Length: 178
Image (cartoon, rainbow, N blue to C red):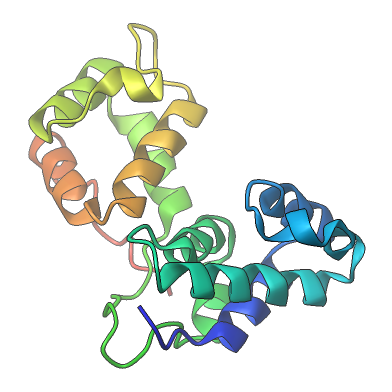
């Protein structure tokens, strides 16, 4: 999709992550292969390079690197910081609701749902629970974060919350970030 607000996304990345975190994430992208010195630049320059590369690649490939960068920032930034630099999308792009407080959701799931119940939610939504390491022990927070991350990244958070709510009514209440 053409028309992302690249400057806003770059500012979000710059304010959300340390230089080391940006470099670690950039290593998974290929833009720096022709210019490895970019990884040694200032944090601001690196954030702009990552965002520009993601936006240009998103024009030609179905998987949007911009979506991936925004998701990464959303999972790590406070909701207030995430909203600070909006809009990120062009006027015709995805319309986002206010971000959910995903940390609060992960803690609720860890506290209120058993591994058995989380596996059942995955099966209802036709997702293999073994992808997240959900085994027969009490769920680890890493497993729950991975699960929430998957549904959030794939745009299925509403279905996920509805399935969890069917087991534990009210689990998804008051998750809108302030």
